[in-house]
Length: 331
Image (tube, rainbow, N blue to C red; front, top):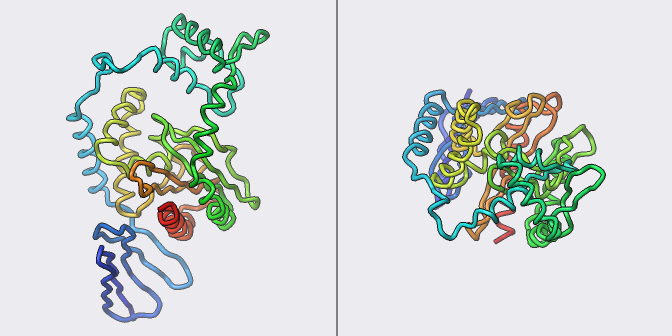
């Protein structure tokens, strides 16, 4: 005997319809977005497992075509024609952004490679930034490290993010349950930066921590963010990605299109060996009530310890519930 349960969430409430009869298998649809009518189909075998139905190849192809059309038809911003844009300031900030977690010292040539600016230009910028205290020069190595003035910029920003304090106990609970790492991130240009991170003590987890930078276009956290924002914002970011990753754009674009459709279907994005072959992760993005702040939260770890089934069937509903709770508490 079988029971087919169809549950659809609407703005006005739940409408449930039960058809057929069974005690072992339940097919049901859950919609977790409060403003839209949509369905997710899962097959539930009581006491055994839940299997999520992925978006079809046709839907992924359609998403690819839509995204590509949006990018091609979007107006291209021209900074040179923007009289309010200060190029020298932008270049100086770009140099500061080149320093990543784990970078102790960087020389002018390394900074030139990362910024794609002439070395002579970088030399003038590092000289100025050193004079202002944003960089410190190491005479012995002939390279630069971030100065205290740079630290002063980030401290106040982190201290004002109340969501870190609210989220941490719930993130730690999920990390302990999943034996994984749970991280909260925000976008900075073409990267996602960890602003909070919780690890399980029961298993090997990644070495990423608060301040770590991961690519927006290749990771589940970044792709969840891309799926959550508006079409116009997504197109603007993807145009920048295409410019910076021309040789890899084909694979990147295919992965993003898949993730956008995946997000509409499963309400999360997955990365099962996509970014790092030995890492599995899922992520959910959410916007706070102010409509401006958009965060992305992931849960991931070694592929040998975290199977796709476990992440989708056990972690996903908990991650969604956690993000919904944060939205309510922040309000």
